[in-house]
Image: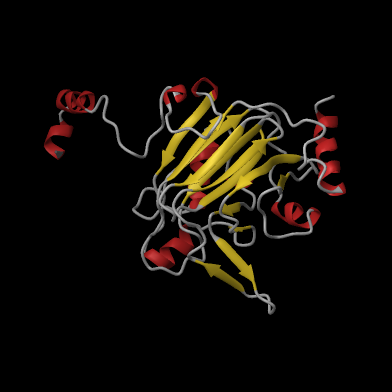
Length: 275
């Protein structure tokens, strides 16, 4: 193979021979060709459909009202998630405010992902898992090197922080723009003494989380093992990402009106779009 690829003509021949190859972990292009969609979703409304293998990353801008479903296909994925205001990325996810304002550190159905400016970036409209983590952030090159022997971006055990960096560079953002993230499908419990206990059996195959974009958002995703996962093997299975167009949240939405704090965060969004 090396001798073949060292010849540019043979390399071109080899590359073109791969055209049309279908593997499980890849984007669906066009997205409207996606199949096995959530109930009620028309193929014509799908704007993004992609399966991420363990260790991979993705980023996409979603318009206000869009839905994004994260499906844990084999039950052992770990979605590290960052969110930004796509129109003004200086506004971004604030995990501390997300848990403080909602008086609950365990996010789930009906919960919000808040920005550092008091606005709702995402609502969690469905959640069959209920085991997610707002405490631990993400792996980095040092933590992966300690656990697996290496953790650099182009090795066999890439870390979430560097995956975020690759995703955000495509949108003009860099290292300084990576805040704390939320981890979906991996639960961590805070014990009475403050210790953090990781639950390796948080999710089952087919579990999903559905998010609704309350602003125009940039989402960056890394599917990598949780930082507290004690297993010595780099264990992270495929996750499907499916997004489709949707309506903006109406005034009588139950999540919007679930608490005074939720209502204020939604009103802050509505005020922002009046400007």
